[in-house]
Length: 135
Image (cartoon, rainbow, N blue to C red; front, side, top):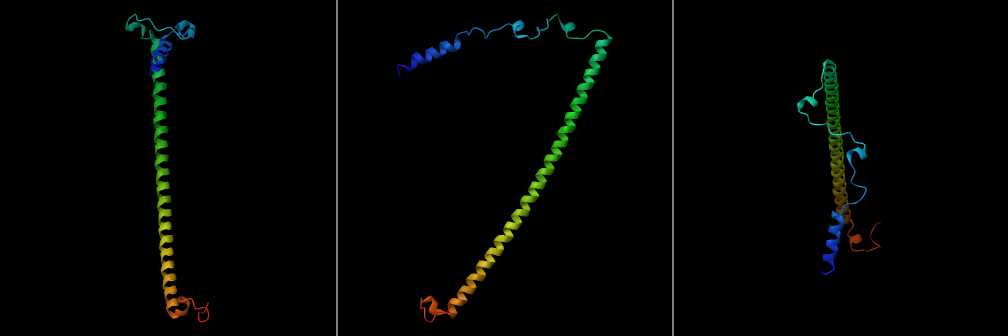
């Protein structure tokens, strides 16, 4: 118990200590500078070329979004078709399994009835009499 407190303090000190080389400025990282906030005018493109460019970019983005929606809808339909196919397969397999179980139970009942009839007609076999039991 006495040893764990200094270890915890050491771990806390190491976690809080700055590591040289990790802290870099935006310029060192090669990232673009943040836009200067001169108000709303800096965020708006200026001139007719900028407006046409904005409209073209908006149109391109709208087309990309429409393509994504169509792709999603196609994938959704394919998923639903796959689920329906899998459900139908499982139902067929369940029906086949049920039929196999019914056939097995019928065969077991037929065997037990035949065995009971044989034992009734051959009481010597039930008594393990090897001379009189027809095997």
